[in-house]
Image 1: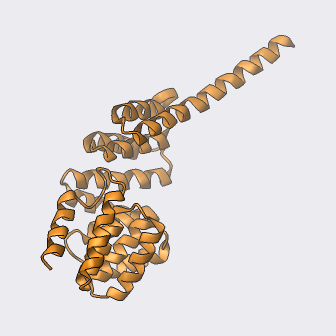
Image 2 (image 1 turned 180 degrees about the vertical axis):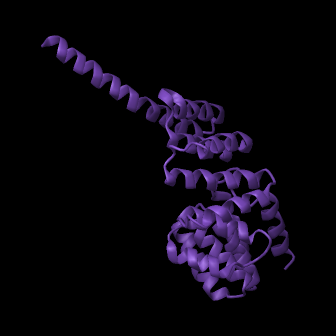
Image 3 (image 1 turned 90 degrees about the horizontal axis):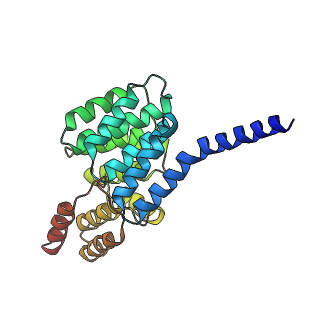
Length: 245
């Protein structure tokens, strides 16, 4: 009887280690990332995603961390392997394909990114695919208002979907609707750089130079990473445009 209890205890201990160790490494990885210790964040997330055969959701998160730190090619390699894994659940595959599209884009492969997303979007209309499709479609200056409205109806609480609709309204000259979206975006996501950048752009278009300057200055308090879609050059160019208005 004692031996059986010991074996059960050992089994429970092993199970706890098996389940808990990846989560522990993920926790330490996120702590390292939050404090700017990027090398430690990468190494610990790699362990979290590969130990005991690998946690597929953690692998997607690991690829996302790599992308936030500018390591797009490494992220692409991980995501492609996941996409080719037939055992990967459909929900995870959608995320992997969408993030890989961003990795393509960040490497200057916009056409590949758009082609992949258009193919995925035919069968998977989710918050993440709506957000990415709207963003990719707007890169050449198009408004894509119908798509952005459809996305907003699907999920009006997602910041990327809201930001895409804000851009769409600006490009079609509907400043009142754009202002309503911008106000909600700033309130819900006070550290979202794109929200303040596009708010500044909107105010400039409305002729409100002072408000434009105010929103642009708020960007200094926003969180950024290599996945931020507004560059330092974009911000500086808008600052010059406001100054010269």
